[in-house]
Image (cartoon, rainbow, N blue to C red):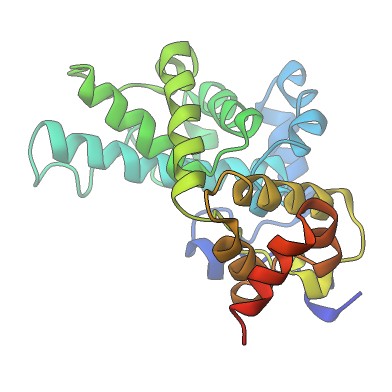
Length: 243
C-alpha cells in the first residue's frame, strides 16, 4: 500500500473548506446519535457501498455537512435565477443557520435527502444543481425544501438520466488518490470504481480515446482490468495513442 492510500481524505483540498470538514470521528458519531433517528442511521452501512467514491471514507455526519454546504450554493443559485441577482449571495436556506445544519429544524430532512443522493451514487453538486434547475424548468416559484426534493420521483428519474448522459459526455472521475491505479490493493471500493470507469468507456462509439485517458492521462485503470474488459485490439488501439 502506498502512502497516498493511507492518508486521510483531503476534504478541504478537494471541496474547499466547509463547516465540519475537520471534525473527528467521535465528534461525528456523537452528533449523529444525538440528532438523527436510529432508523435513518441504520441505512448508512448499505449506502456506503453506493455513494459517490469521494464520500466513501467520510463519516455520514461529515458527508452531510458537505452536502449542506453544496445545498446552500444550489439554494442561492435558485434565488439568483428566479428572483433577484442581488438576493442570492448571502441568503441562508435555514433561518439563522449558517454552517451547522444540526441546529436547523429540517436537519433530518436534509440528512434524508443526502441519503437519496448516496443511494443513487451521485455527486452532491451534480444532484443539487440538477434538482434546483429541474424545479425552475417546471415553474416552481418557491425554493424547494429538502423534503420536496427527496419525494419527487419524476425529478429523481430525470436526474439519473442526466447523470448517465454526463457519463457518456466525459469520464466522471473522483478526486481521492486511493482510486489511482498505482494505489490499487483490491479494496471493494477500488473494484467498484474500476467497474464504474469501465462502464463509462463501454458506452463510447470509439472507446480507444477514453480507454487511453483512463490508462495514461488519469491513471485510474489498471492494464490488467483493461485486458479483462476490452478486446486486445481495443487495448492495443488505446496504447498506440501513447506512442
